Length: 633
Image 1 (cartoon, one colour):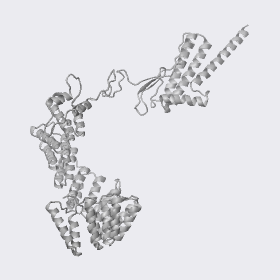
Image 2 (tube, helix red, strand yellow; image 1 turned 90 degrees about the vertical axis):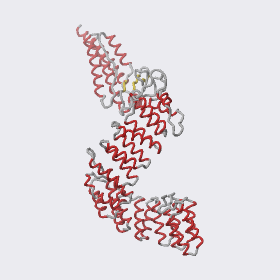
Image 3 (cartoon, one colour; image 1 turned 120 degrees about the vertical axis):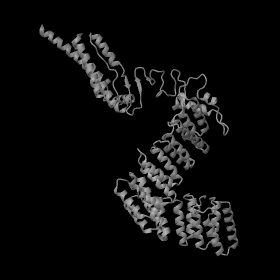
Image 4 (tube, rainbow, N blue to C red; image 1 turned 45 degrees about the horizontal axis):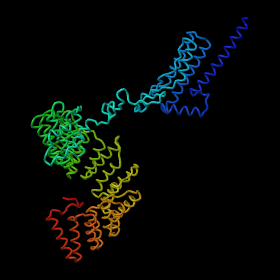
């Protein structure tokens, strides 16, 4: 009897185990297990990747597989053990272990987690089994907190197929409380600063010399009955934006409203910075300058600061008012304010642009004495460029040799300025020493560096020095550019190496480099010195028709000289007509001198008298250009 009972129990257990294994296989198939076909696995993996991203499909599918396999084993345990609470508890523990393993595999770096998983609980076989079925039938709910690049914030609810983007406050998708949509109705609104800008732009443009009325500005900024919240920062933004749109009058009117309103809308230093940045005309710049003078006279220490001073200096520099910019710098010193790097850089930029080396030297010395500020390589380079623009190269080169006195840390910009200054002063020994120091340091030597050194040799017609530098440039595998060939041709022109200029020109064409105006003028002069005026004329035609390179008076003068050397005075007079008719260029003093002399030597006395009359007319009108480039005096 006992043996028969054990046999029956064994057969029942075997059938139960078989059914449990079959359920587990089904669960694994639903969990993208190995039992499914390759096409089904690819389809299911694609679904998962669309939900959570391609890189994390493997993590999610592995978690689903472990969870559902655990549930199947828990159900098998319940069926074998009946309704025992301990066995149901074991089922819960198994499901919990599965979830923990799935959660462990989902790394923090991927920032994805399984939000909910099936959870089997005990109490009875039917009850626990029902909950297990509901857990297996439930869709996966994934909460994506952040994508790998930190931009995606969403919640995917696979049960209802909904995507919730908003959050709990009216579905607004704002950032920082400044979004384009409002709370419940989704009505489109503007940011406070943009609203003020549009309101100010809707005001009729004032007559020149007049300002906007205070009440008109007040109604635009804060309309009656409206409850807009904004601050001084918002108004500063509006002033800056109005200035960028070319409406300085409205920006100034908004500033006057702020000054009258005071309180929390009182202007601060950034208000004046915005207003100074908006000044793009001479009258607007004078308005900003008057405000600065009022600060100094009234002793407003909080507004006499580096932020405002550098902005006013930059505005004055745009109007080429270097004296006003320098005066602002001096005002800061008289007020006992410490000037920072931005103020020094702004005033040195203004003095460089207007070629004022003496004042630049004073500023550089002040910078060396100022506590908390040290001369920078940029400040030193700006001072050197001021000497360069003033054509005072000897003094500039002497300053460059004292760079160590100012304890300046050199960089490539400063070294290039020093090499250029030494070359123009004719001190090629110093230029080569600086060039060698650059090559022996960690600074990168570029095409610009070689061009700076070549310029010194070319300026004084040292063809051998130029060829040595160019050969070193090719050995260093640094590509030449149009300025490199310009320096070489200029050196050949000034040293009389006209045949060598042909080789440089041919090499430039092989390198497919388009020449510019200075190079063409130098090569035309080389051709003219060899009596090859027709080739020089062909180069001029290519400049006009093929390369589209602008011509200036120096190029035309070179072509006129080429024709005169070949005895073609009539062609030279034709070039004078093309100079005025095609390019609209006025003849220079050199043009008249060369043509008048050629006409007199060729017995073209009437034409020579006509040219003299034209020159006298231009001279009396103050339009006779003395410079070879043809620039206005």
